[in-house]
Length: 505
Image (cartoon, rainbow, N blue to C red):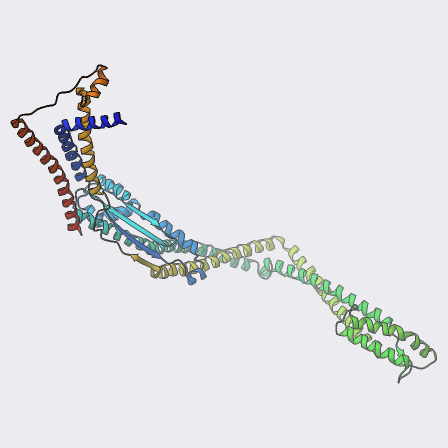
């Protein structure tokens, strides 16, 4: 610990002994460093925020989704810093006053691209930052240029957001109109061809594709009639089976088993007429009752006499209706089969003309469908374009207008000036210490003894005359004055810096 203390004292003594060298080196470093700091131009930064509302019920109703508008805005944001737009910014601000050649414009565009930042803080909130640090301009002019650049970027953003969509929709509509004109010519040619063909083959006006359509419709209707005929035949057969199991007459007219059986069968027929199935509980109960009454009713019938069974009459009437339906469907089937045979025969009489008529009608139908679809698409595009232009124009809003910077964002000149001062003082002390090491002088007897390895008996103190003391004090005052002047110069530079900032504000 003692050796470290002695080394520290020796270092301080060495630096103090060469304090003029340290002061000179500190002055040289500070002057050079402060000159470099003074040459660094101030950078002034202007910021603005813009907001774009993406949610629009009317736009979504016509098919303009939020994703589409996000994609459009992102495209605008990326192209905002293109060379063309940056050249517009330069020519509309003070940056373009001294640009006289394409090469100078290219360099200015590259520099401006580095000084512009567009950041999306949220999905629909954008932060625009513009910085100006042109050394040929004053601080006040750089501050104004930064604000003007940010404002011009907002104007371009608004213009691209409005006119860009309008121009894109206009180009699309123009393309669709060109396609419509082409399809209209093709459709007119197809109509002319069909009219000439019908004049040459009047018998094929209702034939060709129309005859094929009629043949297909007749076949489809025949399949439906046959299915209905099978269902009607099944219903008639089921009705005949029920009629076979029902007696024509009933024994007795006023009561007994025969009368009860008639009422039970009438009830069962009424239930089935209402649509109840055999698994229904009421139907099952009626059938059980009928089964129980059939024996006694048969005995009463064997004893002689009877009346007409109303259930049998009802079933017979229903069977007649079913059979009439079967006859009607059979007649319709026969008519359809005859019509199909006639249409098939007509197709075989002139197959080439029928095929040609089919082809002409098919081509005309395809062209007509394409033309109608293009008309519908054009109207939808026109509506979407008007909505995107008019509705989105209202949604664009500048949340924070471009600020006019009051102080530079870079460099932090006071900190740099202080840093240069510290480096100068440390550099001066280091130079003095290094010179002491080169001269191989010893500040203490212990250091001399350690270096030489020989015992040191003592040291002689320096005695100065009065004249030498006055000269030393005079030189010391001069050194203090030089050090104070260095500090005063540092303070003066700080004052000048803050005065310049106040002039900009």
